[in-house]
Length: 232
Image (cartoon, rainbow, N blue to C red; front, side, top):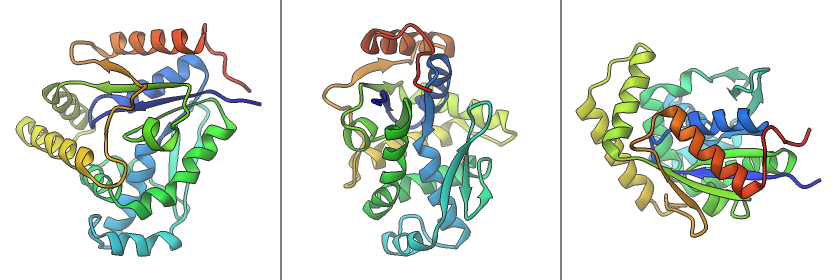
């Protein structure tokens, strides 16, 4: 059986995870949050006192790590590190920064690649990240490059952090967004870039509902879908 895949790439704070998850629910696809997988590696490094930017130190961790994912009835992707559910822990701001550093390490990307590709071989998937359409699933049926102005992304990130009860200073978050853009686009291992055959979707002026409508239109047009048509 042939399964279909949608790759959504873009910079930090563009709304990839939120929109990919909502799109998957609308279409009946499995949502694979690849950022959560890298966050789990970042968390593992932090918990063990290893600098996430230390390629040698992080690479040495990998053989002993057990990273798995499972899905609840509502489609929520749960991440497990050495058997412990770390779905909430990986969303902390410091883990986000650690994930960006760890993701630049080739050994980490190689370690996690098969986990991502196996999901696409076994399900209709929507997968979001920074190199899905360029590296992980270069043969995806639809590639979307989702972006927004840095200021809009910083404001969304601040709102997200505040909703979780965390403090957020706009100027600091904006600086972090710009720094992460720089790191992600300049790293040697699978830098962030728009795939040649990806459709650009700029959501700077769109709210969540409008952004989802845009992605639904793209999916249904490119994949000839009418709704939840995923394979069982």
